[in-house]
Every structure is written in structure tokens, then in C-alpha cells.
Length: 477
Image 1 (cartoon, rainbow, N blue to C red):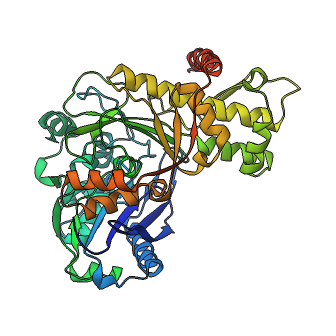
Image 2: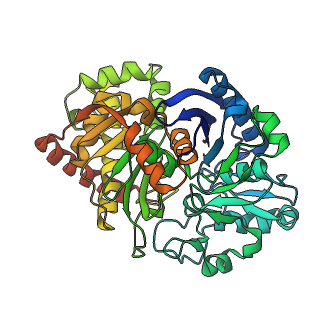
Image 3: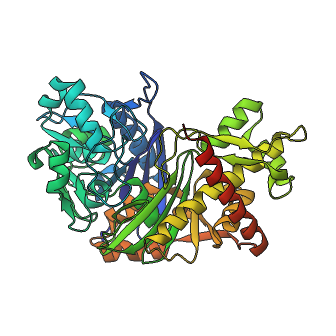
């Protein structure tokens, strides 16, 4: 175990978060800073990697200040980032084009789908590489390396192109079973392996801080840089996903389900399969694209605060008086994998009010999570409970709806585990190998409320999911 404080950094869709962590003590301080997303056209979503660095600098300095430690005493830093962002860098590590993030749908879906999971789509790397080559050939040719959000940070911190297996595993250029870049994937994407980062395990030291980044962050050049993970897998570690059958939910704008399974499986999977940050494990992960985002949308539409809508929803009967909500407001990720899917309220009457609609949103998003759980189970996942993190997890109503829909107990993480991917990264920085990171995750996990599924409501939720699947089929263009 490394002595002294360490730092974990996560570059998410809307902000960078950093924590200072010490084994035995936990999180000593934290900081965050936002960065913008540009939407030049409908379906496009891009970010400036330089803005990531600005938010990382602010987040790290805020975390160190709140921890009350000296930057020179920080011994290691590990990073994670939003998955499936395409970042094109020149030989000096300077971006030659805006980063195309996971929300970007401008590219055509690749005609060659060689992976057996749900990795292929306009949102992933192969499609974006094809778009860049066709529509921005000068930038494509100028790129010395194609990497990810966390890969960009590792390049900036160390001067070398590195990426963790967990982060690379999201990309449809990666062979999950073989744990490396795929010759088939590279051929399908038309990219040479020498233009991709070197791969490292999540606890591997990939260098030390260069003088420039060290000065930017207020840290020492003796600070080690650890490969880290992808934001889902790092958050899973923080939530205590350390062995087969451990499951978690990251609830925010989207709802991301993750269940650990033994590494090495390669059969058909209707969700994503990629390496966990801990050796010997994969994650089966499925996402509903607009969970918390759907309730925020409804709140804006009705001019009511989200908390008020949740209170009104709690006063409504289970089943929302027969109103169903198909939660596909921005297409859907898994297991539907349909960017053209759309949201629907069905069963409305003059009696429906704000609370009815809010209850339908809560139950509809819970059904989407249950749909992903069924898909993960079909691929061999055997979770016996779920640990929930994120803003919507603060709602007892929402967590109970998820427990009822999935038929699994839902426990809400508290303390360090509730802080997400940056805490998982810090555990990877503190542990000198996968086993030590696992021990830290177990030692520091704290939980709060536990929601047991109601058998009668589970039956009702199963019927609702069947109705929603029929509704989706009926509304496809």
C-alpha cells in the first residue's frame, strides 16, 4: 500500500471531480469544476480537451486545499473519464479536433460488427474514426494517436500515450477476451495499432508527473501516475464491486447498471462487456440514457422543482393510475441500442396530474433498469443485490421502485463509496496492485438505507415492462 495521500480524478460529461484520499482515513477533501459541451448540430456533441484540463486543474487544487495537505506530499494520482470519447492528438499531445464524446451520434454505424456485445454503434470509436477520416481528413491525418478522455489526461500528465484496459475495453477496437487491441477491430476501423495508446492494468504506474502538469496541479514531479479506469468501472470499485455477482447502480442523468462476472467470457451479450479495474473480472454494463434527465425534463416542463415532483410522486399510488412512461427521451442505449427511440406517456386521462407523471417517470426508468438486468442475466450475471450511488439514489421512492422492478434489494452507498469514480481512482492510486485496491474498496464501503423488493409490486412491475416493450415496438418508425 502506498503511504501518504493520493488523488483520484474523473473527467465526466459535465465536470471534473477530484478527491484526496488516504488509506485508513478515506476521503480527506474533494473538488469539482464544470466544462461545457458544444452541440453544433442536432445529434452532435463535442468537448474541448483543453477545457477538461482547466477543470481538472481547478478540481485538484480545490481538493488539495479542502484536504489541508501539501501538494508536494501527494504520492500518486490516478484518472478515469467518460467512456467512448474520441480524442485525436498530434505528436506533441495537442488535440487536432474537438473530442467527440459518447453523446455524439453524427457518425454512421459501422457495417462490420465483430464484437459479440453491445459495443457497436454511432456513439463508439470505430464509427467516429470513420467520420473523422471522411469529413475532417486533415485532422485525421495529423493525428499521431487516437485516445480517450482518460487517455488524454495520461498523455498530458506523463508525456506518453497510455490507456487502461478497462477504459480501452469500452471501445469497439478492443478484444475483451484477449485483453488487447483487436486486429479485426483495427481493420474494420481502418486504423493502425501504432496510432493507439499502450495498454496497462488499472493499478500500473505509467510514469511520473512532468514539470508542467505538476506545476499546473500544485503537485510534485515525484508524484506517480497510475493508469486508473473508465468512469463506470472506477465508480463500481468505489461502490464495493470487488467480486463476481457484485452489482451496482450509478444514478444520474443516465442510469448505469454494472455487474461483475469472471473475466474471459465471449458469448453474445446484449449489454456492454469490458474489463473491470480489478484483475480477473469483467463488468456487464447496461445504461438507460435518460433516467434523472427525464425527471429534470419533466420538472422544467411543469415549472416545478425535482424534489417537489418526487414528493408529489410519493403521494400517488403505485402504478401511477395506469400511466406508463417509456423513458427514451434521447434514444436508448441498452439493451435496445436504438438512437431513434423516443419517449412516450401512455394511459393519460384528465385525472393525471404532475404527481402522476412524476410517478410514471420513476417507475418507467426503474423498468428500464430491470430490462438491463434481465439482459445482463442472460449473459451470465448473477447479482443478489445492488448498491446505488448518485443523485437519484437519495430518493427513497426511486430506490424502492428499482428494488420492486428488479426483484433485488437496493442498498444506498454512503460516505466515500457515494462519491463515485474519483474515489475508485484514488483507491487504484493507493493500492500497489489489484488485490490492495480490492481491500481498500471493501474496507471503505459504507451503506445507508436498504430497500427490499415487494413481491406483489415486482409482479406489477413485470407487467409494466411487458407493456413498455410492446409500446416501444408499436412506436418504432
